Amino acid sequence: MTKSLLIIANWKMYLSYQQTITLCTQQKEDLISCVATTPHKLIVCPILPAINELTTLISHSQINFGAQTCSPHKLGAYTGEIDAQSLSELGCTYCIIGHSERRHYHHETNDIVAQQAMRLIEQGITPIFCVGETLDEKKLNQTLQVVQHQVEPMFQAIKQAQKISSRLTIAYEPIWAIGSNQIPEIKDIETAVAAIKSLGQEILPEIDISCLYGGSVDENSIKTLKSLKYLDGFLIGRASLDFQRLQKIVSWFKQPGHGE
Ligand code: 13P
Image 1 (cartoon, rainbow, N blue to C red):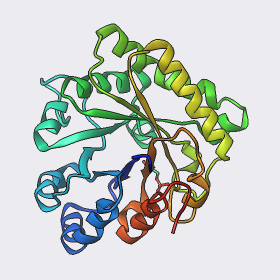
Image 2: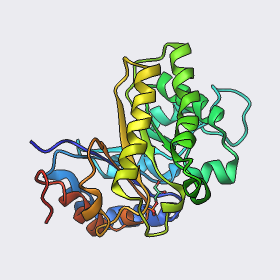
Image 3: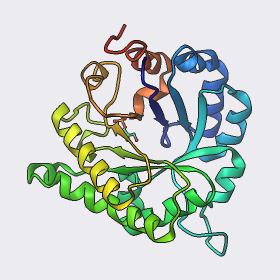
């Protein structure tokens, strides 16, 4: 039987509110058909103001909605922030945290991302925690140290707070592979994923950790990436905004080991 994968569409800030609604209104059937005949789950992460309208516009049991970040704080005097409780009330069941673009432009540290994870878990939202090395770190063979250093504060925070209700989803997304049309060697992805899972099992043996790969996933790279073992899904940027390309990616997993 085909394994059920998580396909996360990170639409970043590529489209405005009106452009997002227009795209989804005009191509709703294409979006739904990406997953309608597969066992896979699609999580659409648009800009936040569009979520409310999209949850009404696109209703299908295999399509869920996610946010792209959340505040590390509980409700309070934090101007400009968006809290996890509101995300839940808006219908988000997933939320991307720790994306390298947030770490770079908004200086989100591993500790801040750990706090974001806590807020989400409290609200029953599954965090999609992004980790990955820079090109320089890769050249210095530091990938495993970097990703373990990124995930450890979150594992420890969850352990200390004994917040174990949620599944954890970690996306291994090398920074140099994002937007570059380059992907790592399959064995390098498998080694990074194995290191993340093994640290998770050591610190949080009772939690089931899913691992995704992100970075230049498209209808061409998926032909190589589909041979990955022990992977639970993909985090897709640019190619997820073209629903026919997205459908081609998903269709590679219609049958075990076979694409179309
Ligand atoms: P691309 O798929 O456009 O490389 O983006 C990857 C990404 O950053 C998803 O979070």
